[in-house]
Length: 376
Image (tube, rainbow, N blue to C red):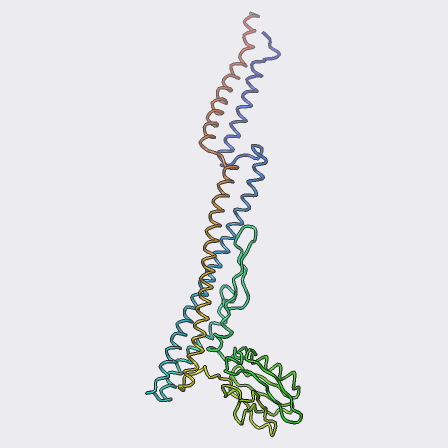
């Protein structure tokens, strides 16, 4: 028996310290629900990367949801435009009724014009500050690594929508939409200056070519009124004529395929840009209007089909993101999360060891007192 070194107490103390450490670790795991860093350092690194990817997937899923709302909003507007076009086509047929007078057709034309204006008002619509109807494509992020797919822009400010909407878009109209097949515009007779045009040319391109080829004149479009003016350097307006008729009032070129600017006197001022298909005040205009509206309806059907395909693509992307998020979260949980059932067993075991160790340490500390009995 010794009193300087109580080996039993030392052993009990060490075991108690170990049990207390295990109990503290178990408490930390249960209270946090996660394994500790020193339990699996490599696993912690992998789990951290997985958690970051899960968060990126959540962000991508939010992007896809917003893109879906954007496309649905586009489709909602196009659906209403489609109803307007349907009514315009109906009005065009009604205006061709032989039993109606032009006065009757003017009444139909009022509604037709209002529907044109309604279509024009959709050009500037926005979704959270982003244009709904723009030629610019939108790149939608669809995964956690920044992968994306491009949604082509739906532009209702150009033909064939513009042909049935606002004067402001008419400079972008092609000559073929005005029933002009192409040919040559001749300026004056001394010397003659020719400007070639084709049915694919827009009005703006024709204006630019005139302004380049004939510096002494200027061609322009008044977008507010829909009037075309060709003006000389002196400020006098020049008439665009074809056999004495304003060429924008004509439906095609003459047999020679030429258009002539009357140089003598520069008398006439402007020509009205309204193409044949832009009204139903006469039977001829109603027939032309129907052709134009039918083209716009076909384009709208194509655009809505495109939007439908985007919605399907976004739906699949959203589902894939949800699956990826679920699986990555499960993998991360397997690496980092504590199995509470197992850990509760470990906690109970460590708790019992701490309590028994404390009791045994107390008993071990009593052993040196037996030496006193030998000294009595």
